[in-house]
Structures are given as C-alpha cells and as structure tokens.
Image (cartoon, rainbow, N blue to C red; front, top):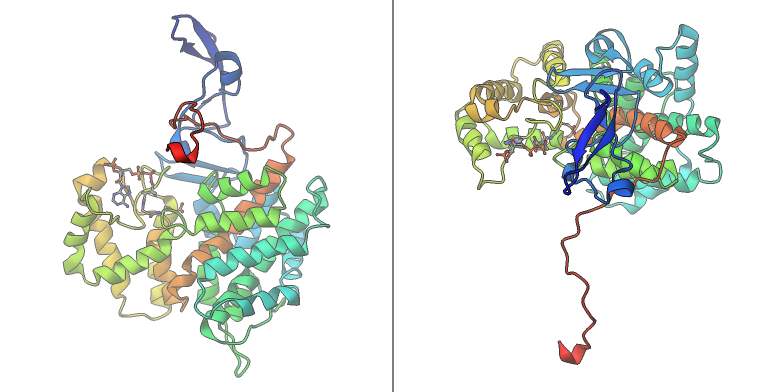
Length: 430
Ligand code: CMC
C-alpha cells in the first residue's frame, strides 16, 4: 500500500486503495469521491462528525489542543493586537492588510452602512415583539431583491462588494430590529464612527438627547466580534456554503446561515445560557442543575458547555472570561451575581466525572452573554451579536466556495430505510 492511500476491503475479500490527502496541518483526509462510482457504496456520517465537506484555507481548529487560527494567526494574538475590521480583511483577503489597505477597507465598510429606505419599511410589517433573529434573517434575505441584477458571482468585484455590504449593513439591520422591539425611532448610521461605536450609536442613541459612546463597550464588542468572526465548517457556515453552492443569490445564502445560527445547539446557546443562569438563580441550586444535565431522561443540558470539535478548553471561552472580569470592573460593577454564578458553575462542572469523561468544557457562548448583558444589550439580541461577528466568516466562505474551480452543488446521499417498491392501491381497497 502506498503511504498516501487507505486500504479498503471489499465484501468479496479483494482490496482497493483510496487516496489520502494531506492539509497543511490537521488530520489527513481519505478522498472518497470515487467510492460510489468505483465500488457502489456510499458513506454514512450523520451530523458530519468525521466528514470534510470542502477544502479551505481560511480557519484551522485543533479541537484536542484547543487551538483556533484565522489564516494561520492564533486567535489569542488577534484578540490581543488586532481589530475586528482588520480581522475581517484578513479573513476575506488572506493576509493582514498594510496601513493603506486597512484604511481603504475601513473606509469602504463605513460607506456601505446605510440601507435602502425601502428595506427599512419592512420593519413596519413585523410585530413589536418579533424576535430580532427572525427579522435579521428576513431583512438580509430581502437584500437579494435589492442586489440581484448587479450580483454576478463570476465577477470578482461583485463578490467583494457583496462581502462589504454584508459586513457593513448587518449592524444597521440589527439595530433597526432592536429599535422596533423597544418602540424607539430608527437611528441612522454615522460613518465617522468605527464599526462597534457605530453599532452602539444605532442601538442606544435616541433623537431627544446626545448619546456618549462608552469606549469600554466598543472595545468589548470588538473583541467578541473577533472571536466570533469564523469557525471553519460550523453549522451556519456550512449552510451558507450549501445554499450558495446551487448558485443562489449570496444574500439569501447568508439569510439561510442566520437561520441555522439561531438554534440553541449553535449560536442560540448564548441566549439560552443567560436564561439558564437566571433560572438557576443561586449557587445553592448548581448541584441540582448539574444533576439534571447528567440525567439522560431529562432534556436539560448545561448550555454553553460542550462542543463538536473542542474536546478541551474552547480558546474563545478563556479570552471571554478574562474580558468579562475587565468589562465588569471597568463598568464599575461591584455586584456581579450572574458572573459569580457562571464561574462557580464552571468549577463544579469541570470537577464532575460526567463532564470530565465526555470532555465537556465551557464554549464561546458560556460567558459572552454576561458581557452583552453588562453592556445593556437584551438577551434576545445575543445571537444577533454572534451573527454580526460571524457575517464576515460567512462571506469569506461563500467567496472561497464560489471561486473554487472544483466546486460542485452540495448534494449528500442517504441510507434509505423506507418501504421497498410496492404497487399503488386504489382508495376503496385500503
Ligand atoms: N450538557 C450535558 N451533557 C452534554 C452536553 C451539555 N451541554 N453537551 C454534550 N453532552 C453529552 C451528550 O448528552 C452526549 O452524551 P452521551 O454520549 O452519553 O449520549 C455527549 O455529551 C456528546 O454530546 P453530543 O450531543 O453527541 O455532541 P455533539 O458534538 O453532537 O454536540 C453540542 C455538541 C455543542 C451541540 C452539545 O455539546 C450541546 O448541546 N451543548 C449545549 C449547547 C451549546 O452550548 N451550544 C453552543 C456550541 S459553541 C457555539 C457554536 O459553535 O455555535
């Protein structure tokens, strides 16, 4: 057997080889693309636990070691030294920008923040209590109506403008959804402000009085967005790639990604964590809830714990926990009951055999909601915040997918377990 091949034994005892492909780092992959054609069998991997769906040079995760890198740069370094806009450039264009490139990119994003006024009118159709994730997905989907004719996926400039628009307009849409929920007037973007300052302005300013942007809040949001910016082939990103693989308008592919993110097993977990902490209420109740999480007959799970890929600390959770300390201190919060409760819950779970054996550690969502809450962002907006950060990852993956000359429409197969062929019975004979 050659070193770069995987030996497969057929039921008749004969053997064949499947090629093995090597990435820069990370496990090798067995290339099974010819398996059905040459051997008449499919593979079976519900949830894609061991399946690489594409080739990508954007993000790398080592789940055993707790490593996350964007374009080769460790997320810890980017969190310490970079900004969300710089990271966005890196994810989209592959390298860190020069000062001129960064200034041009930043300017470009600032100049795409406004929405078509017609798009704003959509918000009048939603009920006052519509969930902001539903509004985000619907209004981003509507961008495909505004930018349809001028979106030619084979045109590199169009692909770039798409990415810039997604990045620039999502905060405006998110803030409009928040304003609808609060009954306050929509606040237009200000291009003199940076990305996170502008978001805070659109969320919290009101026409009746001046609004002072808190630099601590802007800095905290920037860090959270860096940490959320990409996470390779996660559920929402794979959804964007899959929807986009048919050649669908990329804005509708992003809307599909937003819908996938909303679920509590994915981005919706940050909202669920805060609701869980509020339900637990007090450290005295932790034991009871940890027991519930371990009970197979109880659907309760410790939200913000566990990850498909990380079987060690999620490096993002460690950074966010430290940021939590800083934000709460700098906002002069002496009384931090939810943070105290979360830290105690983490300690109890990390010492518990169930969580140790199953390698369940806090993930990115465990502490992020505490920061959002401290910044005055309501729980229903938490997953929207995740979507703002992840929007650039989605756009980067769509661009990579659509430019791949080997790209194909995503079309998995199945193990059929329904009835075998049978004849139609007339209704009076059933
Ligand atoms: N609480 C209690 N038990 C858990 C938990 C948890 N949070 N997570 C996993 N388990 C158990 C699970 O019951 C299973 O046990 P068993 O092997 O006895 O059946 C085992 O651990 C493996 O879990 P799984 O559901 O098969 O693993 P998965 O890789 O399919 O799911 C997960 C990963 C993140 C969906 C899951 O850990 C979970 O539901 N966590 C809570 C929700 C959450 O925090 N999601 C955010 C993920 S990070 C942000 C993002 O990427 O969106």
